[in-house]
Image (tube, rainbow, N blue to C red; front, side):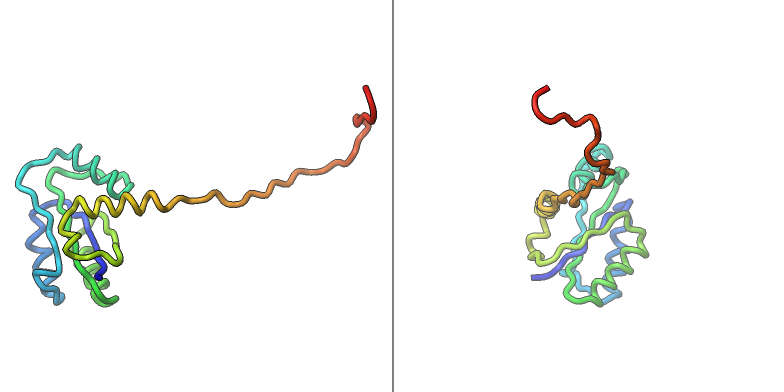
Length: 145
């Protein structure tokens, strides 16, 4: 199984430049997925999906773009990070041990992120409370009052 880095970009017109940059770094056409869509999707719908997907407050434009790249080594991870940074990615996620054919579905990646978020339940830290002790004072009654 491979690992996948997914990045969000502002505009779909960046797809050619990102593809060229990835290929110049040695990635094959079959090593990355560019999720393009023909239909216009409103920025409100995209923002809502993105915020539930990645649990952040990023506001998306109408023509945002998502790209996933299969990586197998630290060098490839660094190469993808360089390409994403060069092309001003808004957000990146790293997924380990995902079959690349499953990543062809953006819906599948959304489910993975949702499950990951649900499994990361943070326990509150142990709290120790200290109060000053004054001992027994004259207001303590022994026996019946």
